[in-house]
Amino acid sequence: MADVKPVDELTYKEASQELERIIRALESGDMELEESLASYTRGVELLKSLRTRLADAEQKVSVLLADVDGMETLVPVEAADTSDQLSF
Amino acid sequence: MGAWNLTGTTPASEAAPKGDALSVSQAVEMAAGALDALPLLTVIGEVTGFRGPNARSGHCYFQIKDDAAAVDCIVWRGVYGKRTFDLRDGMQVQFTGNFNLYKPTGRMSFVAKSFTLAGEGLLRQQVAALAEKLRREGLMDESRKRRIPAFCSRVAVVTSLSGAVIDDVKRTLRRRNPLVELVCVGAKVQGEGAPAELIEGLRRAAAIEPAPDCILLVRGGGSFEDLMTFNDEALARAVADCPVPVVTGIGHEPDTSICDMVSDRRCSTPTAAAESVAPAMADLAELLAARERRLGSATQAIVRGASSQVDTFARRVAAAATGRLGQLRAVLDAAARRPCLQDPTYVVDRRAAELDQTTDRLAGVIVRDQARHAEVVARLVPQLMASTSGFAGKRHALELAASRLGHEGRALLSAPAAALSSQAASLDALSPLKVLARGYSIAYSDAGVATSAAAFKPGATIRVAMADGEVTGTVNDVRPAEESAG
Image: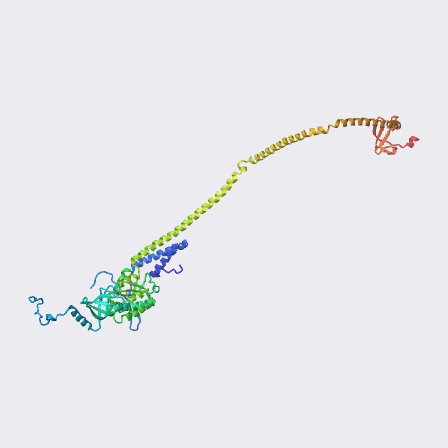
């Protein structure tokens, strides 16, 4: 674990992949006890962060628009409305 | 007959006099001739009642129909053998041929000399041909299909931005997994120019920075013609060549377009396509819960392993120590059991016992030796006795010799003895002792018989031997003889 980035700087996917790696390493049983305890601590940290992100997740939607010069820009738009109410 | 007016019209007595009536054969013949007079016809109709070529003759008998009419249709074996597709019920087919009337039954049939697919059927055939072409090129090979990440965090959607489909995709992913970031790229999905717009949409979507994990190419349900856009060869090639994996969701379940065939993943609907790019939040939560359990149990296992290892070490240390102590104890016990420590008198006792044994052996040996010697002696006695048996004779001879020797010896000595005694008498007469007896004495100095007075000095010892003894004295005075002689 040479590249220990603070958990908050990881994307969900990176954090998820690192957690899986840690668990696999722990499950392989080849780790020194000290290393495994450090990994466990890191794993718990990742787990907590991932849970928080799941709970707080907000959909991000944007539209790719090309202007007259052909420059592409991403324009954020409203997230989907998930209420099941019908609107007319 | 005339009393009945069955038709309600005036009797056609003049138009068809009884004598002018035709036989059925004549009538059918007329009809057949009329049909034969028709030129070669091309008819479009839907195939119905098709049951394949007749098992015996190989000809095909079925009907073609439209909304208002139907007619029997025959395709002779030779014609059907040259077909480019199999006829099936429901197909819109264009038949070229002539009407024919089979006189024995009066049935009219359309006899097709050739037939081709028409309308949608034709389109489907063209689509199938294109699909086959692309398949041969390997564009549909499983090995070409790229893996779509199980959890795409950034997804581009190429579709019409005005339809309901884009909202469906957004709503589906918002419900399922709001962590997925959506980038919408608008393009016409049907009609003139749609394939070109979609191709451009794919290009733009793939060029987004950072690149999306996959592109959703979706379109809602529609007629076959509506969905024809997605059977466009150029679009299909663009999908296959897209640098980003493409997931298709075009139309509804049974619809399959060529884009579906060449895409990296084909889903039956836009919603299904959206659902396929990321796991549901509930699944993620479950996955996290599972990982939490695995993390816990793996760590616990490691700690338990380490702890049991420590226990093992402890047991081994204890066992090793016990073993070593046992060894030492055994050595000590063995030493303690040594006779010299168990019984200090043992050494002496053993020696005493040995001595006793030796004594016994010695005694035994002596007794045995004695016995043996006695035996030897006993054996020697008779030998000795035997060897001394001649002694008596010899003793007698010896006694005889001894007496003779004595006799001879005496005889030999008598003469010298007489001489000797005479000589002794002479000698006796001459002996100084006789002189002494007459009163002479002999003086001795320390140096022996003194023949001169000079042999003495005053104070010296003088011994005087006389016939019956000796006198010892000290010299007081020495006087030479001239005085006395004087």
